[in-house]
Length: 365
Image (cartoon, rainbow, N blue to C red; front, side, top):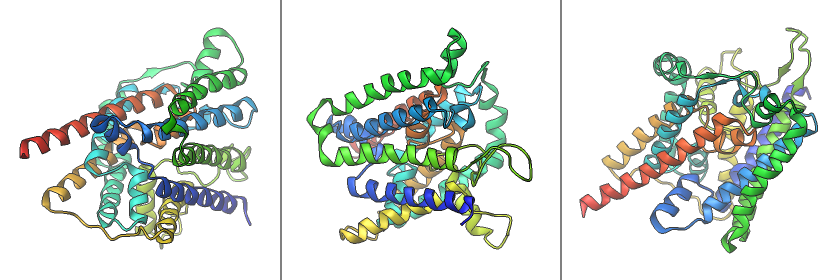
């Protein structure tokens, strides 16, 4: 088996586990925000924060070991597009409420039999593709992306602090990872609901899977000198950099691969197999525990909400450079400043979306 095939199979297997765990534990970041706003329940938020903490600890342990570095990912760019991170995050957060879940939840719901999530997937993918290379992409590049800070190093905290204080970046990664990741774990475990079986399975399991895919892409799939280009490369990635799980741009790449399948230049990538793996993993669990149910739209308003939400997630997710998983877990694990800005935008957008829905319901009473 070639090295590229090993990377793809490993990523597929890890994403299959991601879908299975997310289905089994009802992991949902939109639901976490809604639970807090509507009923003051922090259980699912503790799941998400625990997963972040594990991802932060794992990634920065690998940085300290010299295996990976944030600068080799899209999150570690020296160009901090903070306005794109913030506005894109706000759009994505609001959109995920309208669409009944973020990108990963959409894939999990498809595996559980949701036909309306299948529609969200297709519309989100088209909107994301247009924002990568089409009309909304031109608008993004000529407006939001022009507002940026050009840093003298990668934007991850270890690199920035190393530049400022003259310390070694790799030596800083572990203490920073332990401090920030440890604080996240402490928050998640502080209350009894954060120590329940489902929370521990989702928090520890999904966080570890993010780290696992980082290792697959950044360590297993790393080639110091590609035989064709004679440059370093990361195999089977759409960005030509190391990647872990994210679920906005990969939906666009998946649609592109399916539509142009006969074009031999369209190859499977880590993002595509991860997208398919989450759906399959969710479906296996849903069928095994007999929770699989066909689900359609409730009416015209429900359809409109999901379509608008899908567009907002597609445009916003690409603009913010990630989703609740792509920025909220994968990006944050690198300790990139832009990822924390995007995460703040997603949370704020989610809160606004939930409050807007409550306002709409109250008006109808």
